[in-house]
Length: 515
Image (cartoon, rainbow, N blue to C red; front, side):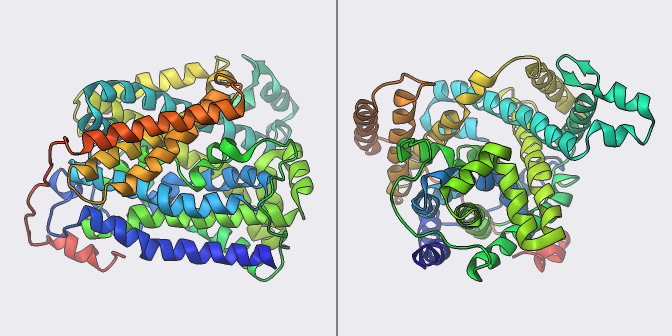
């Protein structure tokens, strides 16, 4: 009963967070519906494309979600119900503020991407470093979301099944090994790569704008079914406790903040918000699209963490399921048990299609980062090819390199990007003398988290946890003091004056579709 109360309380807090704290964040930016957004002022038919608000919202939700608020909370649930606290309060005070401010900053800076925003507010040196650091992250995300979904497809459709359609010789050929992978695995990976290339090259409303809203709706149907099962008792409730229940006795601090990631705060989101900042038609919809999508992701994360805790009747059952088949097995088991054949279809969508929707936007962001860095307009198709070809050549090459060690740093690097983005947002608000503490507080917290993690973990310096935590807090305090000292010396920044323009016929025709 206490766990159910905690779950319902989390839902209420997340909803209230959107209407109360989200409105507070919105007032700090002071949206002006009369100010033309980049989608209108810089329309190019490729990346700057005005779309109805409901479509932009659903694309934003899927861009920042994918498997993030599913797999992360499932793994975070190993620490027990305390994961609820980070999902709820991390989302309201950190993640949603982070996503909203980056989206707002991009709109106020002509649709600038994250590296350019970092350069504008934190300095040119920071821009150069951020460009290649974030570009590496996008390459890693994109490459992993080629091989990962391909492996799942091969498991669902083994070479024997496919080969039987063409004869026994076909099965033997599909199972033959090339560079350590089967021909069938390479075939699936190449098909995914082909889709990624198309999605990266084509206008954003051609594939992403057309199909992503339906995938996002399917994701919402999945979590709605699980939420109903939780509320009606079909998935049992685990007694609420703040005790660390991790089967390997791993400390919650700072691991849980790195593991849950997209379910609460994620630097990957800072690369995605500018994509939709280039498609939003009115500033008055910023809170819905950027803050609201992250709140929805928090709800998804809360439902999946509660499902993981309750479906297997405790940590032992969850741990056994993860050891046997990973988070994908948990998704499949829970969806099929609660929603039957529909749940099975949604589970396949969840573990196969959703990571692909994160992979293609990662490559798209990679193209845009390079385009912004080299100031190469993207309206001409040849300019897109110039950037996309080397990007995919590098990604393909990574499949022949054991980058497991590099990938082990991804969680830390992702949250470090979030910390930097929040510091960038704090400067943005401070230069406007407008509630800078909204970004300052989570920026300090994420700085302490990421610093402590890299100091105490084996992938970092391997210090004793207490020593690493003390040093992490000290570094966070130094960053806080430096910001407070510099705040009064920051040059004030004013937004461009609003220009009230009459809506075009096309805008009037889609106005009724806006949320």
